[in-house]
Image (tube, rainbow, N blue to C red; front, side):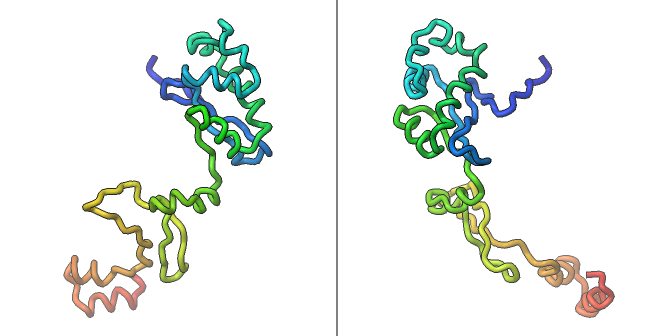
Length: 180
């Protein structure tokens, strides 16, 4: 067709993936799970349905494809009984691709994100220190320093005098007349 159909929270990368609820059921109590062919047997065991690993209706990716909603429902029935960090621990023990859905607080406080400067603290002359996203580019010969945005009018003189060539008197008039 001309368009890719909307898939909601489903993965578009070829392997079925879905965000499943975890206990206690809050807005960030989710784990994103990807079900690869090699992961189906351990998942079926984790969710307490080991018979599905060999069931012809479930054993292959082709057989599961028309049952994806039911498959993730079964996984969620299991995951919703456990906290997300326990769900992640159990899935990771079987090398099943998964990841937590994090709250803003969890992101800001994540030690690995801070250590990799994906979350940084930036001083601001009026707001004080604040937390923001670091640069995703990590080049050894071109480090990126994340700094606060300039204050309103902070670079007026640099731009109007240095770039546009206005004189000091013209700049003073622009300021006193409220133009800048």
